[in-house]
Length: 274
Image (spheres, rainbow, N blue to C red):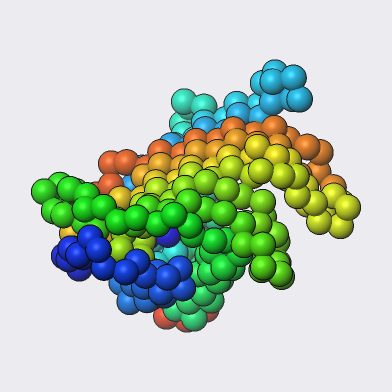
């Protein structure tokens, strides 16, 4: 999740901490208000996914280098390299077609808003099923600017009745989170599942104890928040797929500013050959 912020304001150390719902509403308000700021950014993303068997032997190891840009606030990624090699002409053609289709899709503001609302609802569902405990406030120096950051332990909410997959998953996760107080933007999330989790006796979804996820976000100099690091590992299964043991890592860097607009003015028309 990426959120822009205005210049930071400090908060008195002894002021009451905001409740979880207030923090979430700050984040969602900033997301809706300032998502367009992301349009000016293009970043380089490097992802590594390692799949092993139950004994830890590597079955697959895939590294991809991608360009990431935003269309009406929705991230679109174009693969440039796979396992250190440039894409073949055929792969490049397919990737260009896929990226063009996504760009046209999210150039429609109604479609982009629907996807943004879905992502925001997933975040709200996830946090609603959790408890933020043992909170404290610290003033953190970020590039010479003092930011008020809230630190919490993440615990399952025993009084919450999960209604969807995200909330069921959240109820078996524990860890820590730090949050920028002014914007509500999560700075660092580090959580791990503390119990097995199954849906439909494991036929629909199955997550084993020890699933781990770490995400870090940071503000650019102009106040736009971007995710710069994500990593995780664990044993998980969805539907009837076999159990994969997966470790993934995603690093986002070399973010640069540019100006571009993408507007779909009508349905795509085929070009007739002369």
